[in-house]
Image (cartoon, rainbow, N blue to C red; front, side):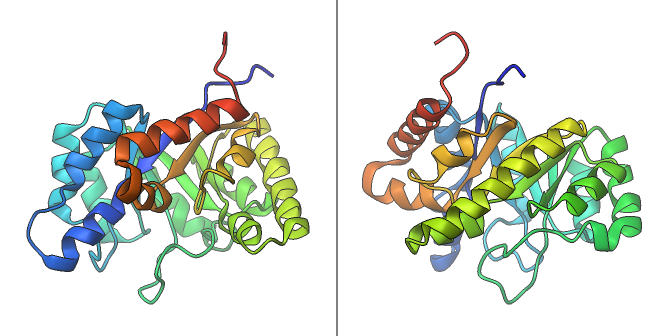
Length: 252
């Protein structure tokens, strides 16, 4: 297969986390998104949680009005979030599992277990022109169910791989990487676009980048944390560099 260009999506949720710690308007998630775009981000991701713990409703409206790259709107499969997505019609919506008690998204969505409801849920989003993505584990049953309900994209959860790498458990890490690699091939063969994300950093992003079927990495928390020390443009530039080292752009 021809190896596609690998896109970098930057999640700016945790700029909003810092803002909300003190209240007010600073730091601005929109400003962060604009800086990320200027530094080479191919898209911006924002997760509007039900409890509004970081991104707020007005942030979505401001992002839609003030960025030029595609917005990937992460959301739970609820009527409230569906209505918000249909009002704004972002380029993409990524359906994620959500529990109030979790600190971050833990694990993939159970598409296979909730196939009928999710099929009805995504149909209006698809009809409105949004590219529908399902955030799932590297599990054939979840991939097949995502294709059946009409999703255009699957985003494979890389959290367990990253945790194993951080803990130095390289055998487990490699097993997770093998599953993700096989899942990416299956999803691609079924006509789905393949993204990957969660927990990726300078060490683990190249592992996902080297999978030829993956066309986009979505990275947030690590880049916002790294930006504290080096600045957001530098963090994004370095991430782009390690991604390109793992998968050189076509013609380079």
